[in-house]
Length: 193
Image (cartoon, rainbow, N blue to C red):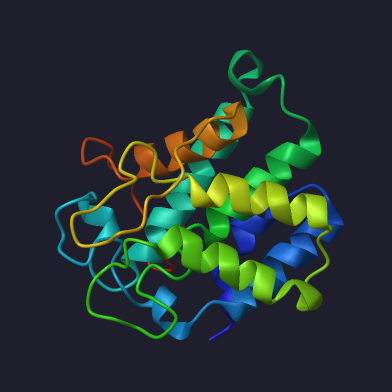
């Protein structure tokens, strides 16, 4: 499977070619299971389009699309630079990259935001992001769970979004997980226009 081709449309939204290359490298590093599993291991927390085989990919595509749609409204995102917008798309592309762990586990790992952030840092030498850009990425990814930052099955306390960029990424992920939002996909798992 060509992992990068799966996100060809989403990568096209990234204007900075260096960031696009970095995002492609990150996508290549994602485990194979990412492209097969549903967005919710129990089916409780995501809409029907995000369930079943490939559901996590569809959820990710919708989160990115939510960002792009809001980028079109300057009253929402006018304060963000083009590079920040691009980095938020990169963050959304991989925010759930290790949702089932480094090796596929049965259920969602509560600490998956921290796992993917550490994975990005561990693979820093393979990527073309500066330290500052990696810090930006990991800050928006680590806090993407928003107020759901604790879990009775884990001692981990995830950071809550504090900056407008962190809140924006959380909002895109949150909207992509709402059951009241119905997104149609074609046979290749691309959002229908």
